Length: 341
Ligand code: SAH
Image (cartoon, rainbow, N blue to C red; front, side):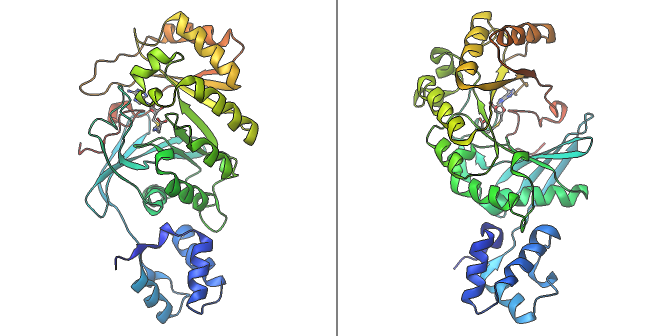
């Protein structure tokens, strides 16, 4: 039987498992402290557990690691980690540092099924879901690499978190749990291309995590082309689903809008975006389009982006214009493809 990665287990799962072995419940807390506070790489490091228990853990579980194939640093401080999973698949994880914070952008899948036309992650299709352990493992890996705590986590790397919901939910709970990494829910952001069935599940998680939706167009005709999942989950269904999410959770939603020259940057689209955001009660985040090899999409100039922003704002919506980091090391939004440099 293949041994399971112990990081796939949430605290309660492990407590039950250990109790079924006749161990006291507090052992789970000791194991979790080794895994998440101290970042142990092997059961034998867990020196306050007796040898028989360490051996039993080792028979039943593994502690999967990554092989770091490369670590690149850009002039803006962003760092991209190319990691090889135990089955040889490659993923990328990005560190975005800022004064007093360290944000990690994690991948949730190898590849992506959704094929947004301007994004590198879906260009070679979908390979597999990451396990919860592989998702949490990315944060542990980066923390170990930088030698300081990770303060924020964004699920904005390769893949679609709501398409790998069970593992994403497990990972979020372990990131958030005081027995795990203890990262406040409000410092965890889940981004989705708009998988409507995932929204009630996210609401039911009952944690104050942030939600971002990759909108990129405010009319079905355009969104059908840019974000193909819109044909299945169109805006007229997505908007009410987001309103429900807001009602259910009381949380503000962010709409992400990658501005692409000559594609979705018209004044009319800006007006529609503003109106849509207002209906949802969402704020809007405008992101310059990052170049992706083999694709001809271009960003707009800064003044054009500001003009677009003003038009959205005119509808009474909160808008921010983000500078994407990591461009020179191909670590920016939409550039993660899990390929060797
Ligand atoms: N699948 C999820 C998580 C990925 S988040 C989602 O779609 O939200 C990655 C973000 O980068 C998404 O908002 C995506 O639309 C955006 N993106 C993709 N390609 C981009 C590009 N070329 N330039 C800028 N942003 C891009």
